[in-house]
Length: 280
Length: 182
Image 1: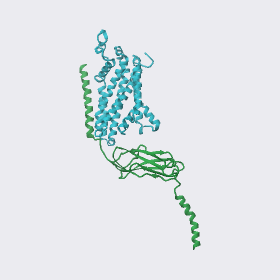
Image 2: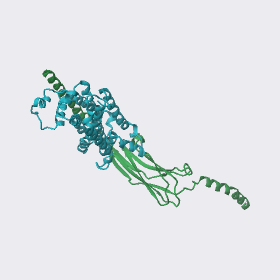
Image 3: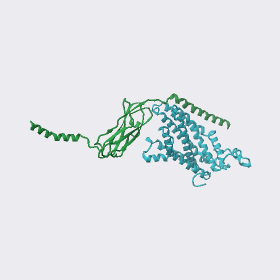
Image 4: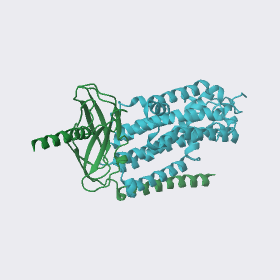
């Protein structure tokens, strides 16, 4: 985050009246983070790259004979899964850079000097990271619509994708922020987050959907990403009622609650000038 | 003459009896019947069909372990790759007591357009009966799959071009304004 010293400290230094004293701290941090991300940062470029990826996929689905074999529901599901997966990936990358990156760029110190609690700082950063997820999801809506028009699955698919993806994005962003705060360097934070994402996504790419039986099902259910994508497939492709496979959303929900809870509880302690888990 | 005929019959009879005993199928441990819940299905490419088979032991003795296998046969020469149609083409069934039945569900993905017959065959799988007893085949379900080309380049191309162009322009404009400001 680029700390605008002339803006934020003005609200607190020299006994001046805060510019927006009634705003909660997390909202001020979130606004500043969003400004950094969307006006002068990587947000628009990431969203542009995301749209290029979805365009290539959609065009191939419309022209390639092999992909064209897909039924509309499967094409919608494929696009939705890529939208959720890549959207969550970019959200995780932004989260992974949020604290360790500021630390390395030397801007964290200025941020810590502002009269905003450290917990509010991590909450603001979480909200800013989630704005990227929402933007990528909005971009994916026209693609889902063009692939699914004519069948009555576009509306439910978009709504489900938004809900399930938001749950995943909250879970992984919170994890990313925890990792970023505890990492000794930005490189370590990004590497750990990429590894985490690969470990969570790899089982979803196994041929035939991975191991079968109760053990395979348990592995899928334990993996928040695999379980969330399985839930989407069950509803969008197999036509199950949205309540039938809700148990698949337990692990994303538990991850979001645990990681989010850890962030709220430990937020004031883990945002420090020096990284690592051994203390200041 | 009568004596000769009698001798001939006496000589042949044991051989004939032995021959018919060898040709006759071994005694089935239970009599299995298999039926499907539908006889005709009309669908379009890409749809998932569910067919249920009911295996009944209508005999007096319990059956051995059984294996049920679903098959799809094209009636108009279309190549059928069974793995594309179903991820699970074989299911095991535990031994059935006399009068008992078991229902197995088969999920089939209609991946080719054309005319097909789907049937289920039940095989004995126990060590004693495997290979020794005849197969039991269900009546076929006739499946007519209509083709459908749902995704077209004409439909997807405008979105595939407009979205990145628009977002690229927005990103470039933002960068340009930022550079001009500072």
